[in-house]
Every structure is written in structure tokens, then in C-alpha cells.
Amino acid sequence: MSKAEEVGTQQDETILLVAAGARETRINIPQAMALMRDVPVEVSEMANLFDVTEKTARNLFDRLESHKILLPSPDGARLTGYGHMIAREQQRALDELTTRTLSKFAASDTLSAILRALQEGPLRKSELSETCNISRRTRRDMCDSLIQEDWIAYEAGQYKLLSLGETKLSIYKGFEEAIELISSRKDFVLRLEDLAQEFPTAALRETRMATGEFGSPHAVLTLLEDQTDLDVDSLRGIQQVYSPQLIDAYDPLVPKGKEIELIIDQTVYRKATKITNLHHLKRAGKFANFRMQIYPESISFGLGMFGDKKVLVGAYSEHEPYNAAILGSNDELMDWTTQKYEEVRQESQTPSERFWDWLL
Image 1 (cartoon, rainbow, N blue to C red):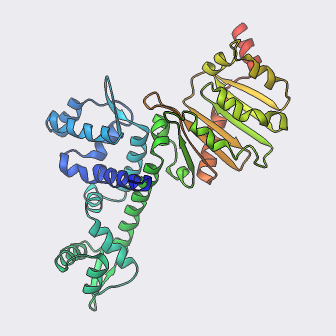
Image 2: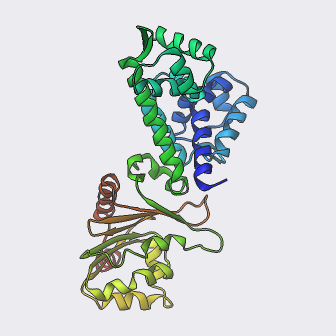
Image 3: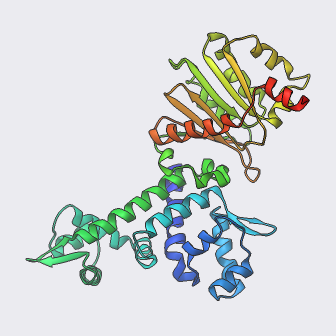
């Protein structure tokens, strides 16, 4: 199976699970996932809430875990970064569609196919059956149902799409496209963990992704290969891990006179100031164009901002091996990265400020 086919399969299974799965489990999955946004939930709590057996609740948990939507923990299960983004897009669709309607779309390719076909213009009965490759009986039953709901009409021997049907299809297509996008960047989204609650889905568009793996643990550095020659006068970044390989990748930029500002957390700073690593800081400190800031707490993500042209966002989770990162220049990604960088920068200190705070 190709990577594209694998992503497509993941997307289809995810849509069926979160949208149509409610009928199978007798559990309102959107409501169940909403509960896990803020606090872990145990199987027994889920069973009591929806008045089902613990076996039924456990089966749902196992299915969500197999898709990496849920992560088990000692005090219950909680949403992964992937789960957070899926839940958000699901809720966005449900703000306009009922659970029943979302389930109907997810469980029936025929429903979507009929509406998409009629988007192109009115069709006669035989034309609609042929276009959608469905039997006359299936077409009749589905169209009769859609006529009753005022999604389509049958006039002058033709089916035509009504505004309500157009609206419902548009909402579902947006949901479907969002799930496809999130699934295509699943490695990165998983590692965002709770940060995924605020990371915009649209920021994933038109990005390149790299994931470290066995035999190639620093694969994310491949995203930097063509960035050092960008015609930009500044580089700003957040580094959440001490990585000599990353330092070597950025090292040639320092003497070129680009304005460089790097934010590291206290753990990285401790490692950087060890005797065996201190030569990196000593060298960088010789250049007036290099500034460093220290964030007082741990950071779970990394950023690289190449002027106002491109940004790189990297993430690491203790539940997933290796890092994953995306590189892009779409407006949503640029805006989110800039805002997040400034938030972290406002809470950071220079080494001298940190020293005097510690001394006093």
C-alpha cells in the first residue's frame, strides 16, 4: 500500500469511527471525546455516563486507541494531539449538522455521491444512477429520503440540488477535507499533544513533513537543507532539545551576519553550559548578531522562523519515538508561529538577567 493510500484509509476509518461509530457503540462519540479534552476519563465513568456495559465502553476505548485518538494513562484515557484536532473538527461540523446527519454522510458514499453529482446540475433518473454507479432502487430510496428532508427536489423529470442540500454537503466536505489534512500530518500532530488544541488545522496546508525514525533519528534536519540560503536577514528559533546535529545545521548562519535570536529552556541551557558542550556557546557569543534567551520552564516544541518567508515547527512527545516537524509558509502557519514565539519570548530572560535573578 502506498503512503497516499495509507493516509486515505486512515482518513476513511477515522471518519467512520468518530461520525458513524456512535450507532455501533450506543455511545455519543462526539460527547465522549469532548469529555476527554480536559481530564482523563476511565472506562467505568464512560460506561456509567452512557448507561452501557464496561465491555462496550472498553471496546470503544480500544478502537480509539488503535487509531491513536486516545492515549491510556494510569488515571484514565485522554485525547492525543491527533485526537484533539479530530475532536475540534468534529465539533465544528456538529455545530451545523446533527450527529445523525454526520453519521449518514460518513456511513454512505452514495449520499455524498448523489449530492456531488447534482452540484454539477440537474439530472434525470437514469443519468443520476449512471453517474453515481448505483442501482435504480438505491437511487430511488436515497432520493426519496432527500426530497423529504428538502435537500433535493424532483421537478420536470429531473432531480436538482436545493440550497439546504448544498449547505449540508459543503459542511461535510469541509469536515472530510480537514480529517484528510490532519491524517496526512498525523506524525506531527500526535507529537503536539495538548498544544494541538490551539494549533489551527489550516496551518497544516501546503507543508512538508519529516519524522525521525530508527536509522534516521535526525530526519527532521532534512527540512533545513534548503533554508540556510534563503534571502532573509533574520533567523529566530525555539530549541526544546539539546542537539549537536541541530547546532551544526545552523552553525554556518552565524558568521554570515544574519540576526539570530535563539530561545532555549532551562534543561537545554544546563546541557549547553556543560564543559563538554560549552564551546558552542563560546563561539556564538563572539558574534554581535547572535542573542540567546532562556525560558524558565520546559518547552515541548521547537520553532525556526526564516525572516517572514518560511517557518519550521517541530514537536516531540514522550509517548512517540523521535521528533516530527513541518515546514511551510501559509498565512495560518506563519501567524500562529509568530504569536507563539512572542508568547514564549515575553516569559524568557537573557543569560545575564537569569544570573542576576538567581544571585539576588
